[in-house]
Length: 187
Picture 1 (cartoon, rainbow, N blue to C red):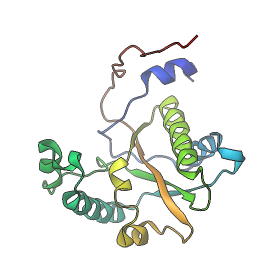
Picture 2: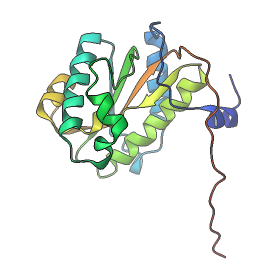
Picture 3: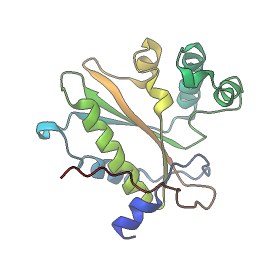
Picture 4: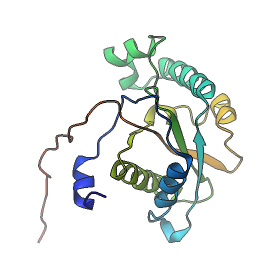
């Protein structure tokens, strides 16, 4: 197992995956480790859904692309994204074999933050085990869409708070480039 600081320094988003399946036991372990994230008042408002159904992921991809094409968000009008969203071959899931949803209780004030923290734990744990992940921010644009909620089987009283794809990277990855930290000291 790599040193924790090395895991932090070398983790990066992965957008190229092999077809190799991820072991269910390994996925369960990643989710267990995600639950060690801090949460407001230790409420632990999260639930996790693991999707490996390629047809369901295809339907989610198509619905999410349609939502993004109709969006007024500035980034959705960028040349790169417009081209990708209109490309029938483009998958927001980058053909990863696994999609993990983190839903939170809508009644819990800190649920969004808590679930985001759980996602980061999942990313770090996956990277430490040689797996790749990528945050699925595009999917969150459809979290209030009735069809997306139905496809994801999100129960009443819960909301999609974070999502990640997981799989085995199909290329060697280099550590991400980072600017030096910008720090203001107030003494």
